[in-house]
Length: 397
Image (cartoon, rainbow, N blue to C red; front, side, top):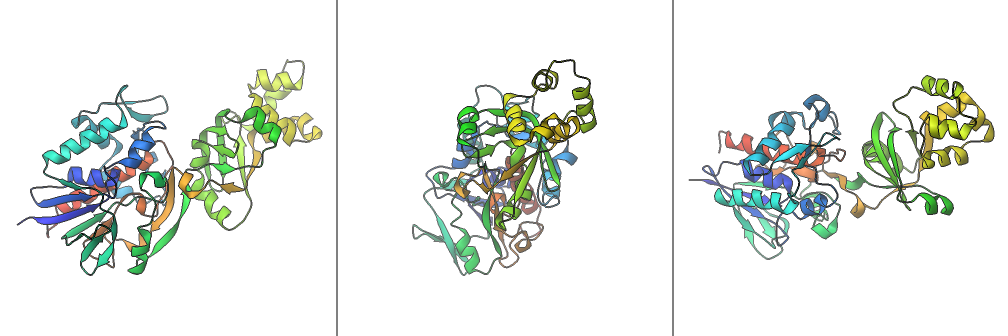
């Protein structure tokens, strides 16, 4: 007789798990609080629909915080495996110039979701919608509708605490606390950060990009792009530093991020280019010789004293390490992703809750972090596929 599996939440982790679980061994039902699965996946696709990243696996694994948490999952279901899986579903992908992986032109997020759903239905997996999980009653799991079920195994894929409009509100955390399961409050990750720009600066530059720069804080440096906003800054170069920035902000301590306007040059090379410039003045040297943008010029002219600006060595130093003070982050709901959730100490190496056997947690509801660019989705896919394969080969299946 088949054992039963209840998947609570139909996001990327839950859908990946369902895709790889062996339905010859298990009866599987997905329960989702919404009217359809994949709501956050669909919204995320509007901002640039990258499905994973193509970099080498050793580098890929290092993008996560903590770095070792997902090693086994990512090695067992790699970024290449994701592309192969999608191709089998009829979703062709390509590697963009940023090394991010996208579906070929014309394929929308809804088509990817529908391809996965169609495959799950052919496997006999059932869906029950408008079913909001509210907690446990001994061995049973309870829903707001009044429904209660008892499954041999329960896989929770309840997401993080951002983008409430998609149903990802983090309200599931309370029943976990009531069971004595260790949880960590959600905090924003991959989010905008507040800077006290002058009104004049905002008027001139809000919406403008800072391209081909690097940002550094703590032990991390990230090359990429930033965008100036009325609020402050956003973009992949700052998102990747969230794991370093947020703990300091949360303590009320000062956060000063260093921007490198010319990561392709060393500070010594910048000094040399300034000293050997044949342009008639400092402005032309910086704009034409070093190809600094109008925003970068504004930073230097307003942020440096006259003496610093006219000193070749000091100017080069600030071109390589221009300080920006962050005074706050965007709200939890505005963040692309969140850290916090179920503590990694509360699950074993198979994502099983230590205090509640046969109950598993995967996806963003666990306390880990990754930058944007396909890493978040890949981790969810990898955890889902890895857990499914573990259960498929388990002796008690």
